[in-house]
Image (cartoon, rainbow, N blue to C red; front, side):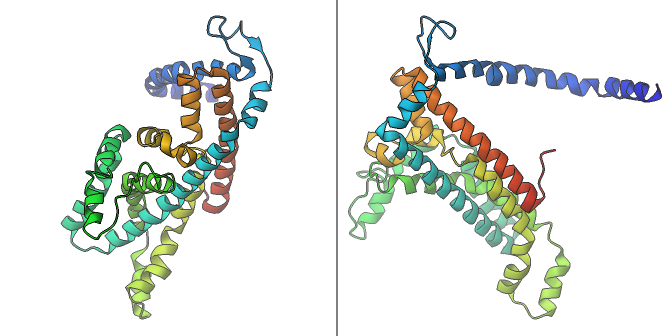
Amino acid sequence: MQAARGRGKKWIRESPLHLMMVPGIILLLIFSYGPMIGVIMAFQRYNVVKGFFGSDWVGLDNFEFILQIPDVRQVFWNTVFIAFMKIVAGLIVPVLLALLLNELRAKYVKRSIQTIIYLPYFLSWVLLAGILIDILSPSEGIVNQFLSWFGIEPIFFLGNEDVFPYMLVTTHVWKEAGFGTIIYLAALTGIDPTLYEAAIVDGANRWRQTWHVTLPGILPIVVLMTVLSLGGILNAGFDQVYNLYNPLVYSTGDIIDTMVYRMGLIENQYSLATAIGLFKSVISVVLIVVSYKLADKYAGYRVL
């Protein structure tokens, strides 16, 4: 009886917090769970006039058909390849930047550089794409003008199918590295200063201190961030690719999300687009579960 009263008092005391969650829950139900009814289109020959409940049911025919589309395998490969490169580059560059910034002793310089590299993170890909298209233009872009001083022919960075995937990775790192750097700088502050003092007593220079103290100190965070990023291996960045790519680079730059967009909203093949999206979502869920299991095992990270 007393325990029940205690729970009742706790509920009353925390009721304002629960009420604050209600608007968010309502929006989540409307915009995240409500549209999930559209998943049934993947198993139908969807007709806009007939709707969800009137369209013909075709079972797994849509999934069998998309596996026979010649471009699907290339699109899946492009997605995995681009996403994997982003994960690797997005791990190495922020760690290096954090280590270099950590060596700076002038706080004003350190904060100024940190602000500069963090600024692109706040800009949308719509805005950045316009800037990059101008900068990388083969005729008037500042990059190609600079290369021309050394006798190098203009490079069509966003129109060359061999170069485009690496431009996606480079521009992604440029935009996101600042955020990752802050995470690793925060991890560096958690390293025990006495470890550096002991290393100095043993005669270790700055390089040895970094190798034997700093890197092991942030290794759990590095492992955690890497493992958690595995869940997004099929998310190669729709906003970025959509705003930068063009038909010239479809062979190497087209990813699952952009393919779904074209098939669903441009070509009106709603069932096929939904089938591809559902297939990707199922694989992503499996990868997320595996990544959290690995995070728990190697970094001691748990959601609950």
